[in-house]
Length: 117
Length: 110
Image (cartoon, rainbow over all chains, first blue to last red; front, side):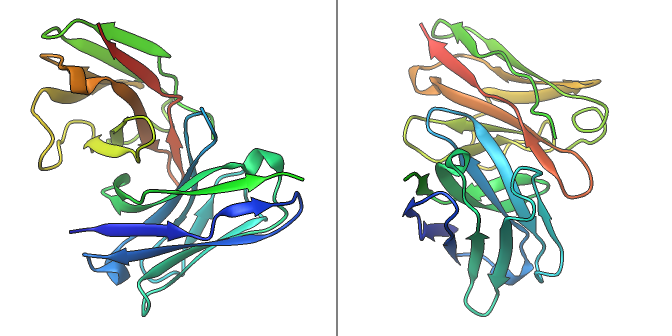
């Protein structure tokens, strides 16, 4: 069974940094594209970032480009999202998701990031 | 990276059918057969319901179906049941390893 567990969320001040992790199990992580998707409180889903299976290719939404960095450790079956220069508008639940033919096939339970002073 | 357009709400009585639209452009919905749909109940993670426009993952009831015409994709839920009440989101691949979601539709079962 596919299992994705996010961690690392919390309260951070504007301008601060946070690193999210997503522990994967139940599938061949090293062969899978992965994504981060976020959802602000009471709002819709927004795609944030994608990484290919070997971590060489990464892509970002314009809203986070230059501030967020996606990475992965295939030996640890773990996906990461390094978030720098955080803004109030980055406040959201952050989900990791396994790609499924250019969709989001499996989702974690999410981790809440709150950016506030 | 503009969001796809969905109606904010939809509703139907038990047993009826309801269709939710998702309008994009020729750069996303119209340009690729990579439209997918997600169901999200309050406080829960989204769940994939349809992928590649028309395909249902294992375990998703065949009451859920997808289609596409031009720049607009649609999700139809037939034989509405109380448990279908949820938020529904569409997403589309937009090329260059970029993805976009719709704003979401709240489906109410009357």
